[in-house]
Image 1 (tube, rainbow, N blue to C red):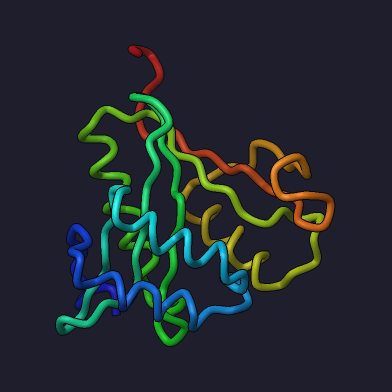
Image 2 (image 1 turned 90 degrees about the horizontal axis):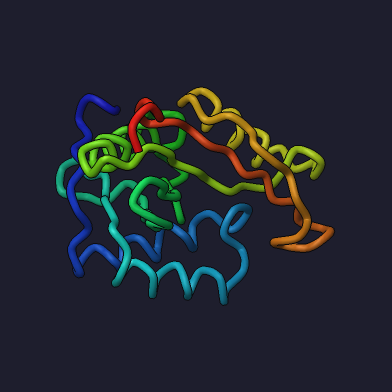
Length: 161
């Protein structure tokens, strides 16, 4: 499917589709207050959508921490489009935009491997396949029952900051 997918900046009319995608993935996005915040964040963060035949298949929102480091704040792809290249297209597009802006490090936070959730095992494998490496697992962010794994990916050389 990735050959037929295009990625462009999110437009205000895309937000409803993005919210529907979140609601269709309760095993990853099952906390209503968090989902509502993600939807609000789409109005202010840099975001991109993946489309095929005019239909939103997925989206990514980025958070810039400083001029050299950014984060994948949220990435979601319609369930029927998982493992089709849509998520990869979104991440690669975001990386290209960030590299153009001279960002050198991209991070993502996900449920850590000490939690036995098979869905998040697949999520970690997805990011690892795209070159992200595990940096740290901590319970300080989300609590004892939700260990947070921070994964990072260098986008360019660190020789000149």
